[in-house]
Each structure stands twice: as C-alpha cells, then as structure tokens.
Length: 521
Image (cartoon, rainbow, N blue to C red; front, top):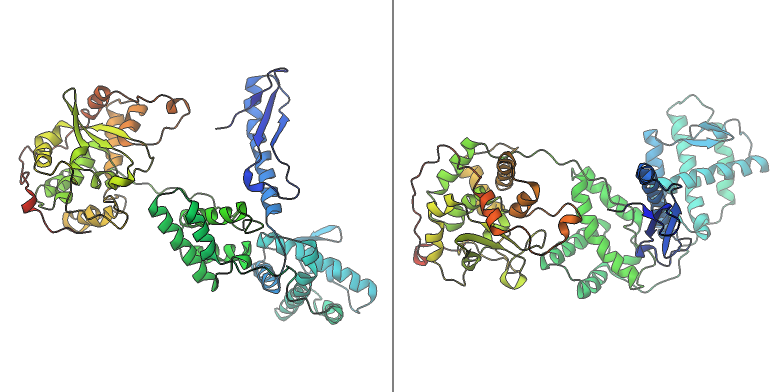
C-alpha cells in the first residue's frame, strides 16, 4: 500500500507516484513520476491528509483515462452517443446549465419563434451543450474534428426530444423551438461516412491470438479469455477491433447487468478482455484501450456461513458410506484442514509426507503435475489425528506412489484434477446428504468452519492463514522464506475439534485400485 514519502533533505512529506505505463504516449499525460508536497513534516499530519492526496490522484487517473479514450466519431458511434443521451432524457436524468441558470433541457430555447440568425446561433450553442452532455453520459471523449458528425445527429435528437415533450403536453412552449431546429437541419450538410482514416482490418480474434502468443498465464485463464472474446463478438455482431469502442463495451456491460449479472461477473469479463486490448495498445495495433475506466465497484460479498456441528456430523458420517474415493475423503480432509476443494481433489499420493513424526499434505502450484493454487504459494498442512484414525494413511498406502490420491477424479483437458469441485463433491452434499441451506456453500463452508474453530482456539492469524492458504495481508508478512514451522502448524491443526456425535466407527476405509469406481468428471 502506498504511503507519504519523506524528502531525505527537507524532511517534508510528499505524495509521489509513477504514472501508469498504460498512459504512455497519451497526449496531455505527463511521463515519469509525479509528486507534490503535503505541506508538512509531521508524520501524523501527513497520514491525516493522505486520503485527500489519494483522491486527487484518482481524479488525475480518471482524467487520463478520458484522454486515453479520445475517439474519432463515425455515424455508428454518433448514433450510440445520441441514443444514450435520449435514454437519459427520457428518464429525467439530464440537467444542464443554460443562459446562466441551471434548468431542465428544454427551458433554454423557450421563446425562440422564428429562425433568425441570432436564434439559430443560440440553437447551435444549446445543441453543443447537449452534445457535451451526451459524450459525458456515453463515457467518451471525441476528437475536435469529429464534432460535425455528432452535431448533425444531435440536432435530430434534440428536435425529437422537443417533439416528444410537446406530445406529452409538458407545460412549456416547445413547439416554438421546432422552427429554428428545422431551419438549422436544412443548413447542415450530410456528415461524411467516417472521419477516421481507413485502417487494415484488425479482428478481435487476431488480438486474442497475439495476446495468447506472449501471455504467461494459466491455461485455464487462456480458455476463459477466449470465451470472453467470443462473447463480446457475439454481442457486437462483428469482430472488427478497430470499430470496437468504449460505447460498445458499455453497451455489453449494460446488457449483462440487465440480464441479472453481478458487478463481479462484469469485472471478471472486463479483466479478461482488458489484458487483450492492453497488449494490442502496447504493440501499437490500437491507438487506445476502450476498456479503460469501465471496471465497476466490487459487489459486497454475500454472507456465507460455516457448517454447524450437526451438519458437519451428517456430511462426514454420510461420507463413510461412499466407495467413490473423492466423496469418501474430500469432505473429511476439508473438515480438518480448511483446504479449498480444488486443492484437495488434485492431491497425489506422494503429497502425503512425513517429517519429524508429523504427517502433512504438500499443497503446491505445479502445472506439469496438474496442480493449481489460488495464491500460487506452496504450503504444508499437518494431517489431523482424526484423519489418521479414520484411515486416510492406510488408504493412501494402497495407491501407486506416483498416482493421484483420488483416481476416480478425471483430469480436465489441461491435466488438472482440481476443477469442477461442485460436480465432484458439492452436488453430493445437496442431493445425497440433503443440506440445502443457501447460506451454506457445500465446499467453502468447511473453510469458514475451520477458520472459526482456529480463531476460537486462539490460533493467531498468521498461522491460520498458513494453514488455510489465505494470501498474506501485510508487507511484513511477505518477507522471509521459511514460513511457520511444521510443529507450530501441527499444534494449531490439533486444536480443530472433532464434531460431537461423529463417533469412532470406521466404515469402508480400505481400498484397492481394483475396487475403485470408473473415473468420472
């Protein structure tokens, strides 16, 4: 997290931040590092005014985003801008300042009866005002030489707004403004079919292929990005990257929102396509990134609750009856480690190891072995005595040492076994065990339960995070390479209580490869 910077010579605190590379080459945006004085040498005062400095920086970035998205208006873009404006008018959201007073959009033209030169000039001024408001609503900044194209369309839109208001019998002399508008329309030449110079065809799929060739992301992210690009193409009805504007993306976003998608869903799609457009801008294929500034506020996460004792006992008791390995053991492992379901399902027999008398799981990111970890960090999680007494080690001993811990869990096309955890064990909780509470997430509620149990047992946060694999929250905790000692982790895991009523009986804990079920996804 950024913080005030103290000048080594003067002792004065400054706001100092490097201009993001995405603004490189944007006209009107400075390069290098920007800084300004906070006007104090007092650390406490510097921290007090720091939020104001961050807000000022956010305003600068917003303005630079606007400059980075200056577009040349084509008739198609003009239509989208005016449509957004007309929709805002219809909703009553448009307010402008005209003739020195704040008023609704119609009042500045009242009393203009005949189309005299002075009245025509006044009309032009008002339409210009509406045009600026329309660009603001559409989230676009247009090139000066593009204004004639949009102006022609705005005259039509403003005239339509007056006619609609007159039709609705809104008490204002709207009809008086129609004659000057009609006279202005007759004087305007037809707009050109495009002000931007012709460019070679550049497809969205081509941008994706160029990004994919140099991307260093997980294969699954590549697939998700390709899906997002295909969804965008389907929405647009074309794949011309040069014609894909910020207004197009706003339209796509609004379509998703109207379909009930959350802000988080949009942000996920946005992040995927933004990296493709950024690569195109960095490579000089596009002049600007139309995705800039379109990320939405993150939706507040819905409360998700841990399994209570009765539910935990029901699930673990039901699991004892299962012969399919993943269902037999996945919930038991999650119940006493807080591991993510994907981390459990991708375990190999060799990931159960022992050191100084402590058995533990090895959880790691390893694409060659078909393993993926959300944080990308390797960790060791001691095996709870309840798992050992239940027979987990005996089961693992029946498997090939170089094979998966759950042979019934088929790998996906990327070689990952940890995907589709819902299908593997989540749906089973709903349909077989009968726990249908919407506040309980079949797999993730175990993580909440383990976190609560460790907290209640007085385990400090850094050790809880080391067990459950939460990202380190502070800069200080990111230093060092040894992490928490296995002995401390084992002591903490041992504090996780066994759900009351679970009993000591073990059912079907011995397995041989020949007794396994056929692989399923």
